[in-house]
Image (cartoon, rainbow, N blue to C red; front, side):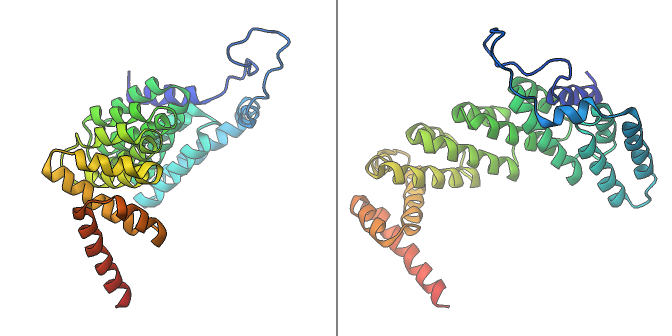
Length: 280
């Protein structure tokens, strides 16, 4: 499947059929009143050939712009305008954008998220077929965020198994962990400790510890004390000290009663530095 066809396939999945009314899923009752189709359906189905031709003319004009940056911006704008108006044209214009360019990356993120909302497996296959590593990373990040709304564990595993790295990927990872920790902090914590040392693990650890402490402080402190690996335990202690610092004084006092001596010492150091910075 060519890249252009893959994109066209992606775009086609995002469009609402003009031939069928929207029917409530899981029922065949003719008396069930179908939901009104999305507003976009009318614009797609009733767009005249002349309107689409004007957009194609606009693409030709955009390609004649001498400045590379201005030309890319103009072509990207046409892709955005054509996603629902003329998906074939959108696919043609998309392929004219340089892989990895900012204009194209924004489109990749948008398409990945919209496709994931319709069909996660199709979105993953589409992302895998992208040739630019940055685009793949951005796409996976958006797909994972969609999955995380209902199944954060699957989203986390998707990111882990992809083998992709990069700052934006790490950001997506932390966002997924945030959703997971809000629902099942113990499971999220058990997964985070499997990370290799680095910024992603530190940020994820901070997220898990902070959210867990807010929902069940005794359990969070108990988990920190149970970590056998010295480096991980110290990282978790530091994360808890930072979480305590972010709380109001009454909450700080409550959490410090549960804290180990090591966590209290870490907190005092952070507080002294924060007070010093505020005084300067």
